[in-house]
Amino acid sequence: MSAPRGIDHLVLPVCDLDAARATYSGLGFTCTPEAFHPFGTKNFLVQLQGAFLEVLAVHDRGLYPPQGPEDFSFPRFNDGFLARLGEGFSMLVMDSRDPGADRAAFLDAGLKVHAPFSFGRDAVLPDGSSARVGFDLTFVSDPGLPDCGFFTCRQQHPPELFWKPTYQRHANTAQSVRSVVLAGEGWTQHLAFLAGFLGVEPAIANDHARFKTARGDVIVCEPAFADALFGYKVAGEAMRLAGYEIGVADLAAAADILTRNGIAHVAGANGRLCVDPAASHRVAIAFAA
Image (cartoon, rainbow, N blue to C red; front, side, top):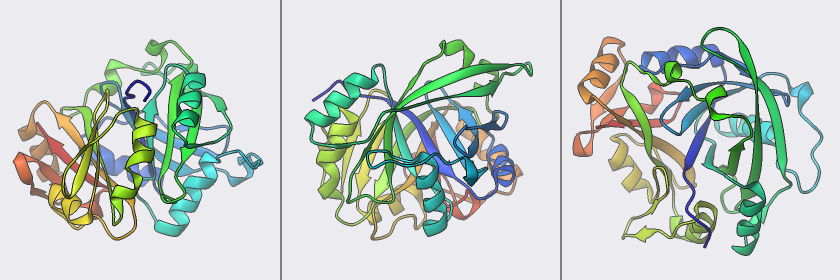
């Protein structure tokens, strides 16, 4: 077993990036400026402490690079996700210090590992200037989870070019990704793959398993457990990334933002605020103090 990895970011594909920006702003998040990938997608981010949300849309299919037999195509996967399933939560990304070590550990764990992939893009800084940022990605896949993508990400640039305090101050007082939930029937069949990918063994209960990573938990569970966690019907038979929990400094501030902006939500278990997935691009979101 390799060293535990931490949650790096979540990929959340949408049909209309401007509409999604309005949604996430309404939820109380500060959104970064729009950015463009060289392979045909575009995004904005919600930066938290050590992790971020990547809200993603298709920009130009003509920029999709050719795909070899060992390649994993990030743009094609997310484009296909939108075509098959609509908006949602498509990919879980863990952090990386050494892509070569990740690759070796994944192969040692018996995982399907795809060809290495690296890219750069321009990031708009809070003062309006731009900086070149780069990323090394190591993709793995589980044939039994065709609607879920997994990779590790190492940032090539100095941290201060990417992480900005201005982008990490949110009206809803968001601080962290506390947990990610993967739900569906047959959830126990994927624990070995996830242990190899996350670098940690799970604590297993009757209806769910919890992987305590170096940054946030990954919960794998049956549909009823996910529904109870988020206060809405969020999971079905097929295994999907259902939603995520955001840690906030002031739950009352988060509740006030949701109420003032007319975003449907309910009180969930253990004091959580649970947003109706119909109001958040088909992704279950819970806020917790």
